[in-house]
Amino acid sequence: GTHPIMGFKAMKLWNPPYLQVALDLDNEEKMRSIIRDLPKRERVLIEAGTPLVKKFGVEIISKIREERPGAFIIADLKTLDVGRVEVKMAADETADAVAISGLGTDESIENAIHECSKQGIYSILDMMNVEDIPGKLDQIKLKPNIVLLHRNIDLETRDDDPEAQLKQWGNIKDIKAKLGEKGLAAVAGGITPDKVKIALDAGADIIIAGRYIIGSSDVRRAADDFLRYLPQDSDTMRVALDEDENLNDLKK
Image 1 (tube, rainbow, N blue to C red):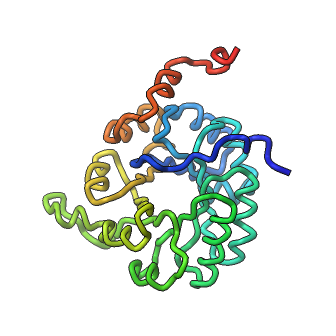
Image 2 (cartoon, helix red, strand yellow):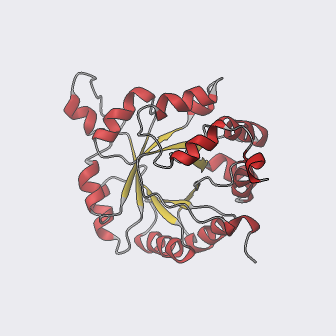
């Protein structure tokens, strides 16, 4: 049957940019404490990192949902094949998006993207180690909702070269154009707060941060270091509620 939590209206990423916090952990208690410490902002997306999913299974997504019922949750499954089964499993656990590996065959990628749209969730195509990203997007008939670009670490980008800085994730605007008008680009790869402005200027919609936030002794402050570069939430009501420590009191 339907998951009790799925009464929640699926959040749609209609108002980028966003900060995606990658929970690349293998400890459930630590995961829960980090989620509790994250600012309650609609600009914060939560990623069930591959280590979490491998250790606890896709059920970990529902556990994240217990901590943050209204969150947009990404399952980083890095699906290479049998994508349909994996996507459905994640959707059943209330995932809002699934990351698929761009290294899979065109057919397996298209199958997974198709299952995502059937389940009403976002497809993310992770281009880690894909040589020709524009070529790959041209090849597949079904396009993902989001393309995930990793920083080319071989590119020695000098800080005094703004052009090179903008190109460190490839040509984001050209890549996004291949997704259609609603397509989004996420960027990852050792991103620190001082890189956020460059990424946004280059066309990124979703900034993915892991270690900087989850490895911090002050998770909330580390997340705020990124969020200060993002616009305020459009939903001011939600920001007002954020000041209140206990939302349940408001419902009585």
